[in-house]
Image (cartoon, rainbow, N blue to C red):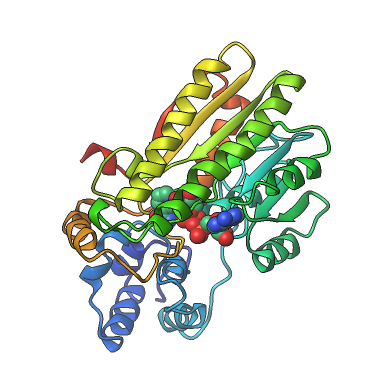
Length: 333
Ligand SMILES: NC(=O)c1ccc[n+]([C@@H]2O[C@H](COP(=O)([O-])OP(=O)(O)OC[C@H]3O[C@@H](n4cnc5c(N)ncnc54)[C@H](O)[C@@H]3O)[C@@H](O)[C@H]2O)c1
């Protein structure tokens, strides 16, 4: 009797326990000179996420070959994804999503459109936005290619919303190079703060002013585990994400009676392939490496987006100023 079909949407754990999937995946890893134990933090992720996680080093073609190997040479039709949308919570609403070309921002834009929103999708990557618009293929997305660290970006993004802005997801952000403070250059500090803090502040300043005029709205900032602890990144990124939490708390208090809710998500390790600069701070990177085994599980961009959309929606009407860990339990370690 043949075994149940298995696809790249099944988790690595499921693959390892599957009668034909287990040998196919283990065989692939062995041939690649790798070991299944190295994937331990990613066991809960769909197999297909290894493409993002590897930053493209593992291709979709390689994943497809493993899937064929496990299914007698065929790629089984994937079952419709459940829970990909919770209805149409954003019908008639306009949401701005920064960092929308890739990773968490792209998943947020995708799901917001699926739930009925008109999305102003903005990013520094014009190619990424073009592929997003092609993928979503509807009149529901307006793309704005802009560098958030450029003050002029704000007017362009807000103008695209044409008056009405109901939600803002501040997702765009960049990593630092893991440098400890004695290794931090002014250049890295400025680059990280200009995007993660100043760019976010400028856009939020303009959007919140508009929301005050229109009677309210919901804003979600994306921070990081580095907003909770000193062992997740270098000093510049850690300080920048602490600042994002500070902005969130201040806004939550300032606008608590003005109809604007502001919350912040704290992703742990997410399988997006976010770029880490090559010029790593040697001292800081060595210290960080010793803490990485503390990460209990990785999450997906789609899981992050689900939380962002919940906070943006009326389902979270009572939630304001929350610092919400979306980290597979890392913050409990
Ligand atoms: N991936 C993780 O493990 C992780 C963990 C914790 C927090 N985060 C945070 O989540 C957010 C999204 O990260 P991701 O993992 O999706 O990364 P990503 O690199 O996949 O996506 C980030 C997007 O932001 C865009 N961007 C970068 N600089 C920009 C600029 N100057 N102007 C406009 N757009 C710009 C990029 O082009 C990219 O499309 C970031 O704020 C990041 O700090 C990520």
